[in-house]
Image (tube, rainbow, N blue to C red):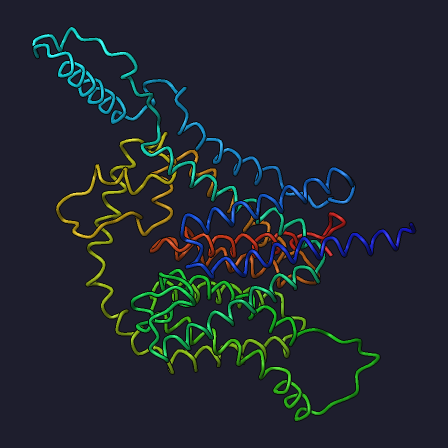
Amino acid sequence: MTAATARAKDRVVDRVFLTALLLLAVLAPLPLGSNREWSWTLCALLTGILGLAWAARALIKPGHSRHRLPWGVIGLWAAACGWVLVQVSTAVPESWQHPVWSLVSEMTHTEIARTEIASAEITSAEIPDKEVAGAEIAGRISLSPDDSITALMRLVTYGLVFFLSFQLSARAEQAQTVFRWLAGAGLIYAVFGLATYWGGLETRLWFAGEGAHQSVRGPFVNRNSFATYLGLCLLCALALFYRRQTLRRNPLYQVPRGRQQRIEEFILKAWQPLVVILLMLAALILTYSRAGFASFVVGALTLAVAARYRGQSSSQRSFWALAAAFAVTITAFFMTSEVLLERMDRVNMDAPGRFHVYSLTGAASEDNPWLGFGYGSYADSFRLYRDDVLRAHYDMAHNTWMENVFELGWPAAGALFFSIGLCALMCLRGVRRRRRDWIFPAVGLAASMLVAVHSLFDFSLQMPAVAITYACLLGAACAQSTSTRGRDR
């Protein structure tokens, strides 16, 4: 087998792996954002199978995978995952265990003693002397070990999606395929959401649901999560549009054209992607998610700043591309923003309850700042701190940053944050140093800004479909932050 034939075969295998990964990413939103036990478990299973298949191939051909992540990213993420295993372990020192476990053990001991006393028909005076075998319950750091294991499974799934996307997007055409699939999925779900909203249908695909016609939610239950998902897909669409409009041709094959011809060519090339962007923007705005829209604006501005920074050598093309996208954004906003603006006017009315949750969560974190209460255990742990001011049930803090600190403690949460932050810094480095294809790391940076801002006000990144989409996008962006030869191109 010649070297060219071997390379062609490797590319076919890479294409199969990438297609399987992208099918997982674009289908994950279908079952209510994969926010059900069976659906996120299925995503974890399929991701694990794909990861094992990739690892087997890497073992067979050790020299095939040369795209390596910085050890800092791997080490920090592994440290956060490892700490979750410590939180659910019964081998931790007793001083680390949450006091609730000792209370449960005492209550269980007393209950078993009373049961045995009743069955033996002896007096209650003998209770203090009664010894019951097996009444002790092993303590842990986590107040809900089962939930911690489930949350760890999901976190490992997202990390594996990121890693596979990173490995399979070493070439620019692979990264472009990732962005095209995500943008196409966003368009399909946006059109479905708009049809459901304008048609007044109480359904999300084959899942019935109340309130589907009150705002655009697509296949998601939560409109804020759908807004985050659409924002990520929109960034991919904007990047592809910008790349298409600013792609340089070989000057030897260019025919001199007048200004009018250039404008006509721009309109003919731009109208289709601009309609796609318009539909997705309309769907995003009609989610009526204040934080979702604001975080997308932050992400889009980040992408625009990066494009302006790198587009100086082709200022004419970049100007028209940015101006067209900006015009479409304004048009979509004024066509569909009436209810969104009304909700923004009510932000001060809605804030007290949310900020009270933030205050209680912060105070609770101070009680156990180093060990945390157990990853994924917020719903159970927060009950110990809530007061009569809160009437609604809060199983999430509506602030992923604070919730992770509450659950993991500052050291492990910091490791998790910094592992993602290093990926964003890789993208920033790619924007600054890449000579071509810098638009891909620019989207990774913009997407990181989007989810970081939205995570201050909501829990969209805790939705499996959103997290999988972000991990897939970020993996491709980081892969394009450096060249496959280990240097910038």
